[in-house]
Image (cartoon, rainbow, N blue to C red):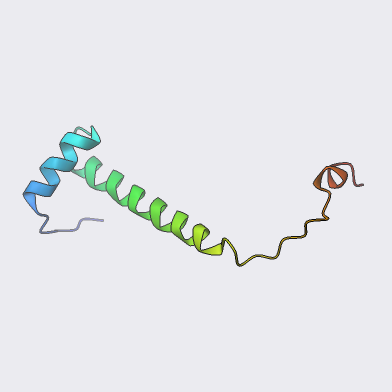
Length: 66
């Protein structure tokens, strides 16, 4: 999908230098993938402390359950 964006040239040049990609397109795609991954990780971190924990659960016994 073709999209025209007004991207700050200084930011793009820094991203090209830091990211190691050869093209602007590859740099923007990599940045978007990393952005999405970080946001998804943050959602997982938000779950800490909200899930019930059963201290008596024997996970090793569950491995042999049939």
